[in-house]
Each structure stands twice: as C-alpha cells, then as structure tokens.
Length: 444
Ligand SMILES: Nc1ncnc2c1ncn2[C@@H]1O[C@H](COP(=O)(O)OP(=O)(O)OP(=O)(O)O)[C@@H](O)[C@H]1O
Ligand SMILES: [Mg+2]
Image (cartoon, rainbow, N blue to C red; front, side, top):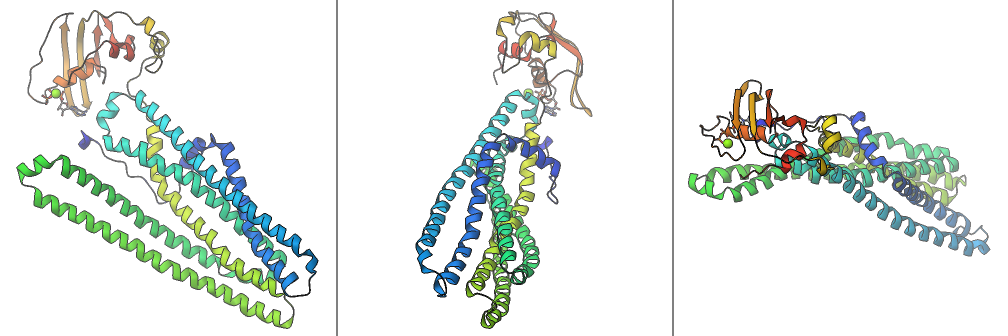
C-alpha cells in the first residue's frame, strides 16, 4: 500500500510565518509557564550583565586604592547576593523549560492520538505506519524541544545583548562602538555557518533513519534474503548508506572546526582594538582601569548570545518540516463521517449513545454499488448482492478482483461512489459508524 503514498517534500528554504503562527497557538496554552520561564531568563541575563560591572566597581573603587574601603562588606554582600540569585534563577529556568517541553509534547501527543482515533480506516490504509509513528514521536519531540529550550535561548540572548549594549553606551560610547564594530561581520558569519552545520546534521539524521530502516528490513526480511540470495546486494546497499553517513558527519565536524577559530579571531580583533584604544586612554588618565576590564569582558561575552540566536534561526528553519508534519496530522479530516442528524441520534465514536443503537438482524443488500480507489481504476461497477440473515456466502475471484473491497465497503471503511448499501433495509449511512462497527465481526 505504501507505494500509493508519497511523502510530501516540505519547503525549508524560508520561514513560513503562517505555519509558525499555528504552532504558537498550540504553545499559547502554556502561556503562564512561558511567562515564568522568560522572567527567570531575563533575570539570568541581568545577572550575567551585572557581574562584569561589579568587577569594574571592585577594581575602580577598592583595588585601585582611591576608594572608600569601609563600603567593602556591602559590596561583598551584593556580590554574594548576585551569585545566590543566579543559582536560584538557573534552577527555575531549567525546571520551567523542562516542564514546558514535557507539557507541550504531552498535550500535542494527546491531540494527535485523539485525531488518530477519529480518522477513517482509509487514512491508515493510505498512510505508512512509519510516517505516523515519526509524527507522534520524533516530530512532536523536536518541536517541543525547540519551543521550550531554543526560544528560551532567544530571550536570554537578546536580553544579554540589549543589557550589555545599554551598559556599554552609558559607560563609554566610543569603546562601545569599538566592541560593536565586529558584530555585524560576526553575525553574518555565524548565520552562514550555523545554517550549514545544522543542514549537515539533518542529513546525518536522515541517513541514520535510513540505516535503522535497513537494519530492521535486514532482520525481519532474513528469510527472503536467504531464499533469494540477496546478502551481497543488501550488504552493498547498507555500505552505501553508512558511507553517506560518514561523509556527512565529517562535513559537519569540519564546518564546526572552521567556524570556531574564525569567531575567536574576530573576537580577539575587537578585544585588541579595545586594549589598544582603551589602554592608551588609561595611560593618559582619561579612562579608569576597571572600565577597560569591563569592555574586554563584554566583548567576549557578546558573542555567545549572538551564536545562540544564529543557531536558533537555523533551527527554526530545520524544525519547520517537523512543524508541517505535525500540523498535517492534527488537521487531517476523517474521510468518512456521520451526518449531524446521525450524530445527534447515535453520538460519536468517542461519545456514543449506545441506548439508541437498534438491534441488528443482519440482512445485507448491495444496491447498484460502484466503487473505485482511484478514478482511473474502477473496482466495482453496478454491483448488487442480497444476503439474508443467517446465510453464509463465499466470494470467489482472482486476486485483485475486488473481494476485500466488498468487505471494506460493508465495514464502511470506504463509501460507494454511487449506489447504496442497506443493512436490515436501512441505508448504512443513516446509522452511525459506531453502531455498524459494534455489530461487525472481522477475522483476517
Ligand atoms: N487502498 C487501495 N488503494 C488503491 N487501490 C486499491 C486499494 N486496495 C485495493 N486496491 C485495488 O483495488 C482492486 C481490488 O482489490 P481487492 O483487494 O479488493 O482485491 P481482492 O479480490 O481482495 O484480491 P486478493 O485476492 O489479492 O485479496 C485491485 O486492483 C487493487 O489494486
Ligand atoms: Mg483480498
């Protein structure tokens, strides 16, 4: 059956805002938890920005010797309070992000499972099992991870960058400009590399899932392999896959290896510029030593959030395929549904009104039924059949002649294109799917 099915190719070239809007709607259910998480992330960022500033105060006030040492205990207390606060912040943000990740995955998996209960048999008939499995397990997991941890990094990263920029400009705008000078280059390089690194990792994952598939085929199909002497061919195919995986993994590693030194060199350039310009200023007495220290620290600190944000943008692009797959499952509509009148009388599959179910006698009539799975390939043409209760019949015909199709229609897994099927003289569409299925037995 899976040969009738083709996996959609998802567009991952640019961000699809409409799609992410729908995903964020699913996330919005957890808005209170998100607010708590982002509060703690902003607190973490604030303390991250405050530490170098406290160091500057320590150097300029206490170490350089022209300050008032009696204030030292208060300063030590403030420093200690910052450390303590950061400990508490880190505890809460990790807990909160984990909570959101699990809650989101739990919630979406439940929705997906409920949807799978509602979908018609034809959905399962057309959709490969592996496809459904991937959606309810890894795709939902990926989304949950990116929506909790990566978004959190974005909040932290932008808060740190805004905080540092603000403090730098209020302390010394010339030095601030020197630090910010290399940032656009750094940002461009980061985005370029992160995109490619993540793409390689994605390829690795893709090949990895093919390898897992090949393994399971190799094991479950061992009998076929042996009888058809396919060992050599199988081994060749498997070898090609592992080769692919090796090549992609090396590519990812090489890209990361090039990326880091470039970034570190650029970072050193901005530190060097600060030391050169700021150092001269210190020698001239126009700048305090602690301020120089502050800027060298900030120059180093600025990069990490930048890298996180670049990674995040690439990640969102990659996760878009997962998002599309999850949404396509959640928005799938059952092809065979009861009419509103039938639902009012008999209830739904998940909420049946069993007291309204009539007792079945078991007379079955196919009344001029025509049916096809694909319009080009008619399976039944003007088919009529009467079976009375208690009668045993056997359908005989060559393979592909439509025997199973007749049973599928009787089970209402599919509906006739024209004509109707009556049970005890009543069109089966006038009673609910739940009623029909609770009166059916099917032995495979
Ligand atoms: N899910 C499907 N989608 C598209 N075409 C289908 C599907 N299931 C069956 N068909 C096609 O419908 C025709 C009738 O198939 P059906 O399974 O009813 O035959 P059958 O008589 O039960 O054969 P067999 O003896 O092999 O079980 C075949 O041409 C088959 O290829
Ligand atoms: Mg059959």
